[in-house]
Image (tube, rainbow, N blue to C red; front, side, top):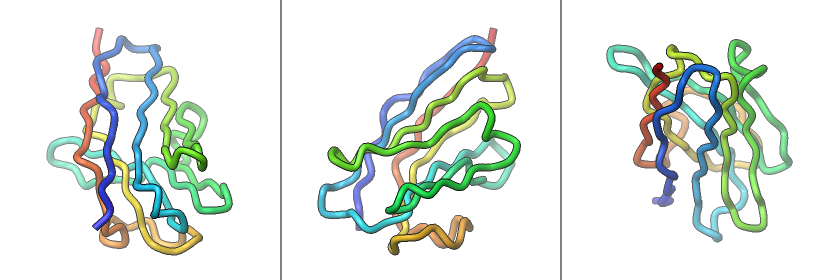
Length: 123
């Protein structure tokens, strides 16, 4: 099982920015990497995903403020979050699925997960 290690989240004020990172093992290259988030009582939802070729899929409601990227040399996934809002408060998870392309964004399609990191947006 792939070990995904996420950076610490944090607390920011509304309008602030935060960047999350997720380190994957060097041997895991041909994968679809994604960020999900979850708030208590709600289902985990995909934020954005990036495939082996750099193709990106983002949630429509977030794509103007959130950006996914990856450093292929270091095998690190990033999520840049700008203009954060209180409703962005959630546990954020990185995830990986086998295969070069991202085809299925259901939670069950991602067998590998990070430990989750809390992001709190509050004044």
